[in-house]
Image (cartoon, rainbow, N blue to C red; front, side):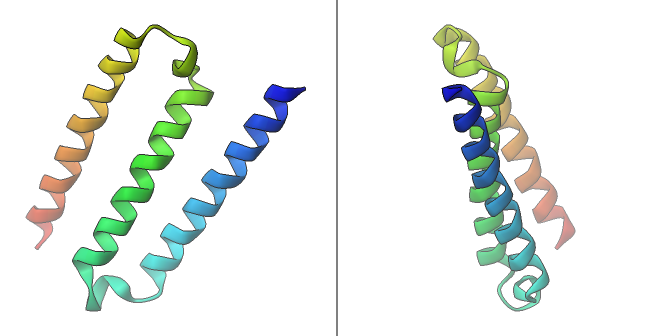
Length: 89
């Protein structure tokens, strides 16, 4: 039962972060303060990715080498997203 409560709590946090991301985007921040909104969305996305990987993909209970491999992929995805953002401007 403990795991169910943990998963529901993480789901609520993920839902809240997604709501904040949508509010940042739809509030018009992207036109006036693009880089601040971009930074906020990237930070929230990174936190969400770590939560999903750690708990829903069970990396928290895997050997550290597997976690480091996934962290490398997260860094690569973040770099590619940042490069795509620069190409839009």
